[in-house]
Length: 342
Image (tube, rainbow, N blue to C red; front, side, top):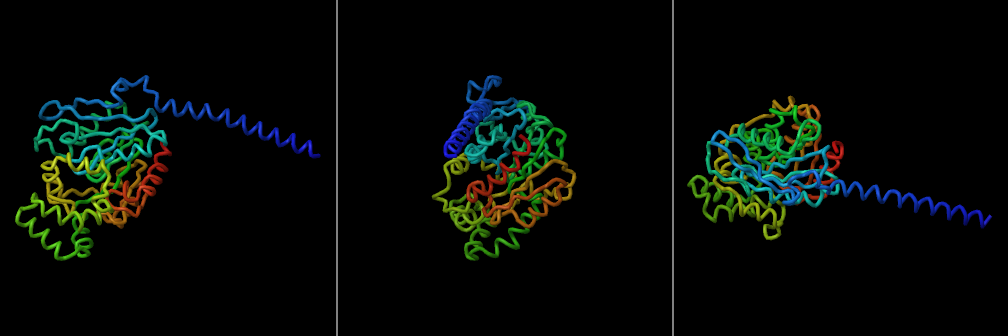
């Protein structure tokens, strides 16, 4: 009996060892395939390149960088601001490669490493939608593989893109962006501002009324009273390097023209934008990511997920940049969603 037990144990160990040995090469093959750049002309430059796009004012170049290789899932990252570079979304590099997602960092025209013509005539939603479509074509995106993740302003752009070109998309992620600027402003005025230090709020509003929003005092007040409470919920001294790098390289003129002087509300060209009633036209699987402490109303974000025919909500305990201040929740829910499409 003892010999039989030993024999069975030995056989079991051999079977388990064999399974591990058989599985290991297969796992290595998957990883090797993800990092196989043999079919990509951008491999020699580490995946980075510039794409020439056409605009009503002539050709310009925008910067993109591919990470990974998965012809079934090409995820384009649309950054916020408007005016921020791809830098703050480099956090994706810590999570998406392990999921086998092919994704693209991208500096929109007027930001980061892309051309900066400094031409307000080009700062319109339809033109940026067209730019995204030109980038899609350049990376080989189509209805079988192309997904978009838009954060903040990028979320607005993602919604507009889906409304115009969902026939070329596989999925959509709207991260931390309401579908209505008037409702975004109302939430700031009715809910968030009354919770602020009222003396600080008065100074901020006085500076705005006096047109002194470019003075250091304005941001010195906003940083602890608004940005650390709702944008990235850490002391600013602890903010991650990619966020600081994106902020330092921000196209401030573009931002103020489109958004207004700060994240306390929008007062620029986008002030009347509202697409909530049109969300029902988006037939794509869509993930809506919402932060509990965000400048974007979490109740409204939940309503967006319901308005979308195939929407689902991912609620976090973070702020506007919950990919940093509630990182475990943000990426657990994002990667679970993306696994459906790879």
